[in-house]
Image 1 (cartoon, helix red, strand yellow):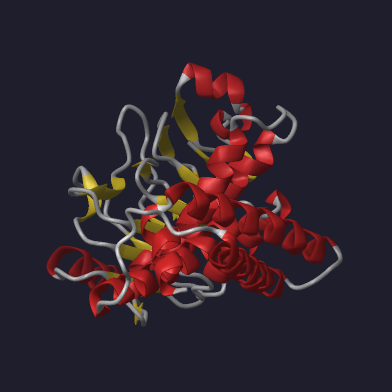
Image 2: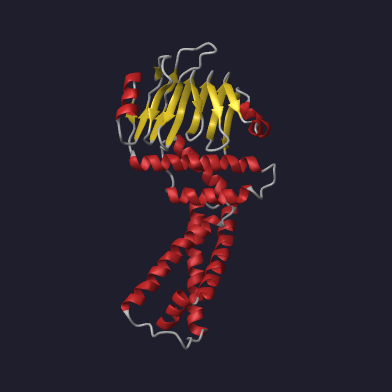
Length: 326
């Protein structure tokens, strides 16, 4: 029995992966059916994992009962090889859960994306970064083959998952928010701190920046800006308003539930979540753009011609509730 287990998990790659794919496929079909019948998403995913493990175990036992030992097979007796078998069993179990999720019904993943975004909105991390990355990979695999009419919902789902992933990564380092009540406090955090920070304003927290200088703030660390109104005195052409936030290096930054008024900004490399831009001067990039429920009011927008043709609302300067990612 042990010798045949060793043969299956260590040397017989073809049989092992054949059984693995059979178990995942059958279990995914069952899980998708359960979800379609109204079962809770988490319960359906757990059912997929458990059922696929049961099927794989049954196939492994059948292999041990019927498959003859190869002549070159070493006798499986020492503890090191025994441990290697169990490590591989654990790895297959983990991969089984990931692949089971990845092969599950697209509707499940879209629902998961909405739930993840709602978690961000409510200051909650509902899933691990790894699970969010797997769900994003599923969406990426579907976008290219989706009909043109369905593509926007996949793009929106990817934006939701990307925002949730950035939020989860920052929250791993910053479990609690710091209240901000003045521009001086905000500058102190953005200029002097060397650690990631989550800055949160209260109701009516409006911070006014002077109209001098190239940018209002700069940061090189992971940050969350939440529930803030950030504005500068209106300027007249040819003067350009100061840039709200200049990134130094490649920090993770998410701006959430904020109003930004009379400032300029390149929207790339920052996650914008539930944000209103009012009379701002904005640059829409061709990549690294993540918008979730973002609105523009009387904004001047510099936009790529291709993007303006494909997503005209994004470049109009006055649009509501845009969720998009490139």
